[in-house]
Image (tube, rainbow, N blue to C red; front, side, top):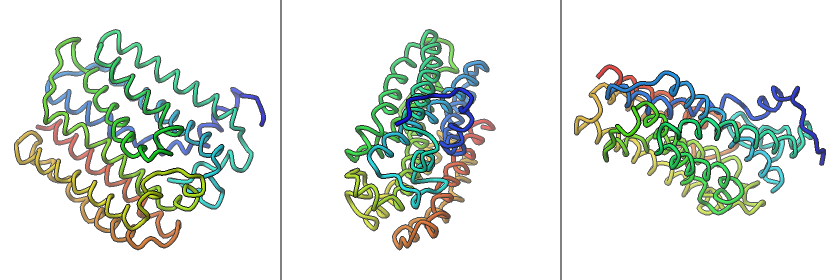
Length: 302
């Protein structure tokens, strides 16, 4: 193992973590921002800080995941794709585990510093930050191998939405209710379905490494039905929130992604190989981008 960390290689470290993936934090942030704006609250500095914090912490999750998956042996060059299997840089020996681990800690500290700053204004963000931080630090070493990673993903990414929302308010003047809580679960639920879909190509490697995630515990076909159940809950929540008038009728436009979901379910149920599954992984990412941004836009124009 090479014990070095080079500042001039930070750009390379970021590329190794497939930075396009961290953009999935943006819809989570946007829903929290849109809900606060809908209620007449906005803080430009905090909006920028929460977005930067979300992106940096997401990158730190990827970095920690790269290190632990490499050390466990469930990353291989053959399984690498733009959405699953790790970035491949550690497997190829281009970056050492020590370098990536150091970078992960550095990213986490930057993100945590933003959270600490915001918590001086909003004490509730301290609680959200502690929960989110625990999801980040324990996700790969504890939750993922124990089969709790999918649930941790829901909690962790919903924390982005909650944290963004509360940071927009004046201190101690928060507005929160059960329907807002349900809305804020949507981004985390979507991100968890992305994880579930991305696990399909990694089944053999995860099984060999004794990573007891859902794909290993239940097999591909059963996990396809679990994925479908999660997506049904996702759409049912949207329909419910529109029906009771909490979300504007415009938000029903998010259901245009249902055909993508059905196609993903059928293809996952009949999984063949990584290359055939790549469009499924891409579609699942797009489902969240399209549906969550449509919901957010609906809140802004309501």
